[in-house]
Length: 147
Image (cartoon, rainbow, N blue to C red; front, side, top):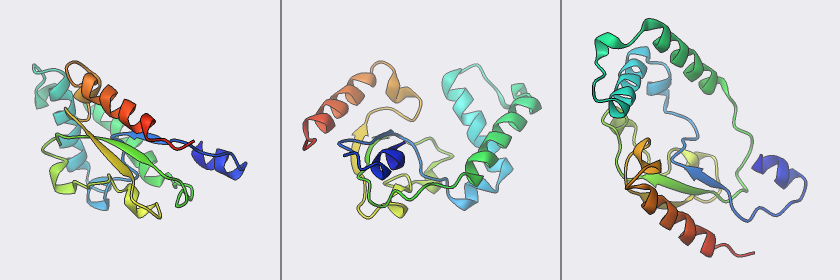
């Protein structure tokens, strides 16, 4: 959407990303076992009662298919668009080997994104008590916009 607005000569005052990745590294995209472990870890973080044996193959297939669509997605040229990344401070174990300060957005921009670290992980940063950290970061980022 930012690219479409820029193409119409609209001024972009703010493009914020909430802990999103430009693209996962290749080692994650081509590894179904890694993906399975990542999905399991995500679900466990949402429901402490979840175990690997409970993961239906259909659910894994569905998320794997979604991941493969994401891999094939081609990012539009956003090199001239300034990005702001609200990044979770905590990284889930399975993601740590792939950790990127800018969630790989730096490979797609002329200048690295402005990063605001938010307490919590990718899933918990939106909920109490971490939502206050996210709100504070948003307020700070919006206050720094030069209109």
